Structures are given as C-alpha cells and as structure tokens.
Image (tube, one colour):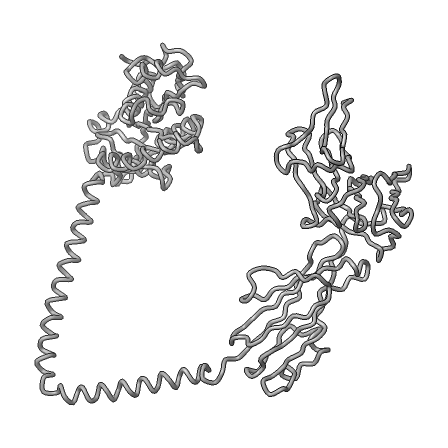
Length: 556
C-alpha cells in the first residue's frame, strides 16, 4: 500500500503512510515491545521480531497483536531476522540457533549446532533468500546456508523408552519380582512387593534424526494432576512408599516439532499389607459377627420372659401401621387421580384450560426473560383448530359418533406435539395447540401438518366405519413481535388466533390462516391489531399468511 513500517531500538514500531506524520503503534492485545529488530509481513499479517520479547503477530485488518515467546516454543526471545520459505514457514535467527514457526499449524522447530549449524548466536540484519529458496543467515561464526525443503513440516515423534528399573527394599535387596532391566523395556506391568520402599525408573526419548531436540513428559495417574516436563530427554523418575493400589505410568516423547506421540504405558501394582488383605477383612467381619451373636444370645436370655408381650405389641403395631400405610396410599392415589381429572379433559384425555393457565404461568415469564436478554428468540405460537361441520356430524350420526370423532382428532393432533408442546381442548369441537417455535415459517408448516392430519386420512369409528372430516386453523404468536415483547398478553394472542380461525372458516374451511409481525413492526400498529383491527387493513408491520385460494376476510 506504499506505507513504511519502521522499527526502532528504543521507541518501538512506527507507521508512515503518505503525507501524514509517522505514528507509533501500540496495538491492542499483546501491545508492542520498545526494541524492534526485524519486520516481515504481507497484506494480512505483520511479523515483528524484538530484542528479548520474542515474536509479535499483528493482524493488519483488526490491528490486534499477539505474542510468541520461549514458553510457546521459540528457541530464544531475541529475534534478529525473519525469513519466509516457500511453504509459508517463518525462519527466525536468534541468540540460540534458528527457530522455525509454521503459522498454519502453530508448530515450532529448532535448529542448533548438533543439527549442523556453525552459529549458535546470529547477527542483526544478516539474512538473505536466493532464487532457489535457500536461506542465508550470518552469525558470530560465519554464514549458515539452509535448504528449507529438506526440513519436513512435521517431524516423526520421538519414541519413549523405559531403560531401567531399580528397586530398593526395606532389607536392602533390589529387584521387582524377578524383573530385570532388560525386561522393563518391553514389559507393560510390574508388581512391587509390599516391603519395597523406593523404586526408580530410567526413561529416555529416542529420536535418531534430531537427538538434541527430543523432549520427554510423563505422569502417574492417581499421583500427578498434569504432565511432568523434565529439562532433559533422559531422566530418572523415583517414587517411595507408594500406598497399596494400582498405578499407571504414561511416558510420551516429542521430536523437533514438539508434537508428542503415543504413550508408553506401564502398570504398577502395589499389594496391600497383610492387615489390609481381603482375607484379613473377612476375619474382622467374622469376629464382629461372633461378638454380635454372643451379645444377642445374652440379651435374649434376659428378655425371654417378656418376649410374648413384645411380640404381641409388635404384631399390633404392625397391623395398625399396615392399615395406615394402605389408607395413605389410597389417599395419595385419589389425590393424584383428582389432580389429573382437574387438569385433563375427560373425553379426549388432553389438557384443559386450567392446565393451560398453569403451564403458561410457568412458560411466559421464562420466555420473556430470554427474549429481553437477547438469547435465541423463540416464541409461543397458539394454533386454534376447529372441526368443520361438526354439528352436521352430531345431527347425522348422533352424539356418540361426534364424541368418537373428537377423540380421534385429539389423537391425531397429539402425534404432532413435542414433549415441550401442549394440546388443550378449548371447548366443544375446538382444540388449542401451543408450541415454541423460532420462525414464522415453522408455524405455517405446523399449521399445514395439523390440517393434513385431519383431512388426509378418514377417522376410524368404533363401529368399523371411517368418517371423512376436515378442520380449519388460525394461529398467532406471543409476543407478536420480539422487538416489542411487552405489547399484549397471551390471551390477546389467543383471541387473534381465534379471529384467524373464523377467517379460515369464511374462506372455505379446510384451511389455515395466521397473522405474524412484519420485518419492521410499528408499535402503534401492533397495538391496533391486538385491539381488534383488521390485519389486512394495516401496513407492512403485520403479515397475513394463509393456505386459502382467496385472501381471507376478517370480521369486525
């Protein structure tokens, strides 16, 4: 973009663009160190090498910086130069060899003298990339020439190996049930005698390609909360006076890229002492049982003369207790049946209005709080369904057939309900289904499924006949608009759904009509709608959706 990025030794990073004065950058996030020694970047990212503060990454779009240091995997926090190879990796010359960082995988690799470098410490402003992609770094011992293609992006993980086991017993003997140092290399389980107080395991990380870069970590499940990272690839791990139990030692090794491979596992079994052996606990239990038997025998000898009276009293108490328990169970069952009866329609076995009021008293405050908190905005949709020409069924087939039809319709609608939905018999041949939905389109689809469940399949009757019938549906949401959640209550939404129901009836029946808020609802328009205004006469604040062939009409 024609601008200049300027790094200083004491004044940090500066940006010079066009004719404007240079500005010092202190980006949010990790900030910026005052001593800048290397700058590398492209249109999206700026990489800054500093003296003693590691490597900074600045996102040029957001301006936020982040920092990478020795704790993250750098060879050293002094970064002299930054070069990029053909694979997008960054090669950094430092005071401790060459550090390679892959931004795509966040993998660090390190090169030192054991890898063939002449220099351990490099110089500032001493680097170059030739046309073949080879990298040149100048240091205190001359020039190092590197071929990036010869260093894979990921190195093979090192192999963790257990090389030795030393056990010191309380009597000065060593060994673990005859297990030799050679066997420990391949064994996956050892058993330590109880008298063994100290044991030491030798472990190492084997990496023939980069021995100096091999790393090791280990942990013992049940003793260590996290991994132990030793400073060397070959360590001795000692434990003493282990409590009885089963332990699992896990050892992992990493190669040059620092990625740890599969675990080498060793199961360690320490048996309990004799006084904690399962047979000892069995003996303790036997002694307790014998003492209890002797005590019971002595007590029985002293209470023999009173036994008959006590047995009679216990028998009487048991009879009265059983009678009370039976009475309580009958009372509980009666109360439960009464509670169900007061909340359930006796004919269709769906909920009644009392259950609806209690359900909405729980759901509405919770839903309103979620909407006001800006969480996923689901709303309650009220679907008012009315069986078409139900009076004709009663007149033609009798009230018994009408009752069978109501039960069959309730069963069909119940199949469409989820666990969190509620189906209510509103009265007569009207049913109310309440569902929590996120989109207006979901409401239209559910209304169509309700209509089809009644119309598409004839209703079977107890006499073996099948009666074809249809229903009309009206629906509305509460709150009608999430932008104005406090406008209107659920009773007004049910009243609006009822008006939509009669609009569907007037449009030819076997149809559904719904009223939903537009994309930019007006508060006054919503109030007018809830007060009884014709939704078709209002502006785009509300929309009328329907399945009728002709636009529905709303009665005043």
